[in-house]
Amino acid sequence: MENNQEKKFLPMQNKQEKHNAKQSIVEDKDLQINVSIDDIKDLKQGTIIVKEELQQSHTSDTTLLHAKKNVVDFFKMDKETEEKKSNNNCEATIIIKKIDLEEDVVYHMSEIGIENLSLYGIHSNRRNKKQIDNKLKSCEIVGVQVPIIITNADIAIEAGYKLDNFLTGNQISTPEEAVNSNVTVEGHNRVWAYLEAVEKAKRNPHYSTFDLPFIYKKYPNAESFRKAYRNMNLYNVPTKTKEFANDILATTKQPVLIEYKNKIMDGLTAKAAGYATIGREIVKRDMENIFNGKIPSEICDPEILTITGPIYHAVMQAFSSEKKAKPIVKGTPIWTYNAKKFSTSENKKHESDKLVRLYSSIGSRECSKLMDAKAKDGRTKEQIVHDILEKRYITL
Image (cartoon, rainbow, N blue to C red):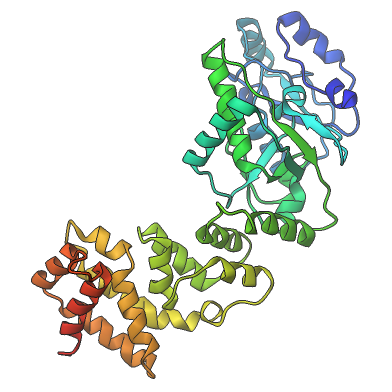
């Protein structure tokens, strides 16, 4: 832990310290990036300008750009520096420190500093404001009881994931961009809660920020990381099926799941989106099977989209001009009716065509009945919706 603390960045508070920084000893493992003064103008006071000339450059343009975007704490230029920049157009060197982390050690973010970890989160991971707010409240009362887990960012990229920097929002997707960076394996929302606490402390001098303990774990290869990451979330109750689908789509292109996700983005509930896409609800067990290489037949065959797709568009078109349409299409009653017809039909294509005709022929009066349907006399809303649709269906 002491070694890590010694490597912590210390803010340069005045011009004399900035001048003395030119004499700083730079270790070979530090990443030195040459940038123009233009790149650092007007940024916040920080720690990392160490020279006014290029020391060395063994990095790609992509890594250079990544370094420029990821460093948050720059010093704010004063008038003297601005004048020097105008006269000499000098250059400065950014050093991104590599902090050597060991396994089986509990580190503390309050000591290391999150800005010194170059910490990323997996892009497909959920960022749920309500969960983050609840996590913040809990941590403010009892602190963070379980350390988060981080690892090298490049292994996550090799596993197929895109990463977002927690501090800057900058996204990276190549190993070259992940030099000296880390990624959360577990504890995504705890990081966001911690950052919320840091912001609260800036606004309120009497607010005390809780610590964020973390441990470092090294994975032998991308596959072992992917398996660990997925299984950590698979048995975490708050994680929803649609979020597992996001994870799968982060590393593979699965046409059926893409359509499932698109329907959710259109406003359908996850359950309704499953019925509208494959004729049944897509559940957590389906995700587990996909993780284990056993893709369910309805999901692995994109041909099903040629059957369910036209019906989906016909339904959405039928209610597109109705202001009250959203509740009827976002819920399950209409989609379970279609699924029921599929399950009893031997000719799926023929059934698809008939259902398209059904929704294309629905009039405004029937639309109103469907949208106003409610449970009544011991019958559910779904049963009433099915009855309305069936009366029109049998006339086709």
